Length: 252
Ligand SMILES: NC(=O)c1ccc[n+]([C@@H]2O[C@H](COP(=O)([O-])OP(=O)(O)OC[C@H]3O[C@@H](n4cnc5c(N)ncnc54)[C@H](O)[C@@H]3O)[C@@H](O)[C@H]2O)c1
Image (tube, rainbow, N blue to C red; front, side):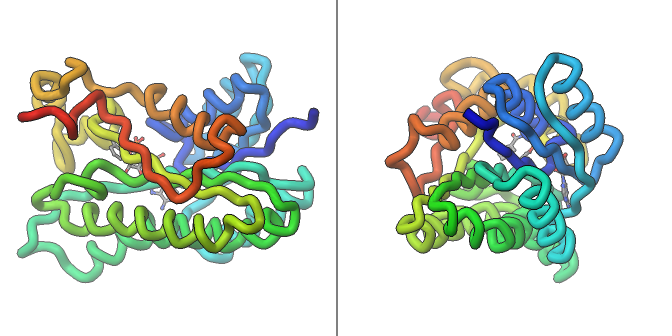
């Protein structure tokens, strides 16, 4: 069997990096992409050093040209793209009074339109091959919670749910599946940011109200992404799975 070809955005750190390693451990070829070149290259090198297959490509998900270029390049060199994990995201804090059009647009450009650009570029050949799986990152802040001072983030992550549903229906006939993940509190740079999220003290306190009693780890998300992309999820499309240690169903 030939290796699956997997493109992951924002894969230099955090959930994206763990996801790259999870797919590599399954024997896939992973195209690690990010704006963080040093970190992204290190992830690809670590995979190769562990006996896996990976490469790094610099990719800012705000660029339509680069999305088209990456897809054409990977298709030309590997003959296909089997899986896309649209993971890149930012969660900048901005109280409503300071939420300028520029801040709103930046978050939407990365967290929502960035997914659309890559899928639009890759979909035609996936459809022609009648095969493909796409997993996009939403958030509990997009499917259930509101997040104060992060209205643009919550709105963009809710948008991911609509994007997943629309794409799922449009691509289903061609056997291209589209699903999403809504992580709870996951221990990454994003969550630990003092400026934009819980910070260290908040991360320390969060397990008190998470039924499973701990923050999620990037690997907890990566494994569910790998499941959604796998044949085990062959009859699933248009769904956004919450992976949160029981946070949403807890009664706090
Ligand atoms: N950590 C959490 O608790 C949590 C919860 C819910 C959802 N999420 C979502 O999961 C995804 C991964 O988050 P994380 O916690 O690993 O965050 P992180 O900050 O650790 O990593 C985000 C990655 O996205 C990349 N990125 C940012 N802007 C980019 C751009 N313009 N082009 C390409 N890459 C870009 C960053 O360089 C980084 O590699 C995000 O979409 C995030 O919103 C995270």
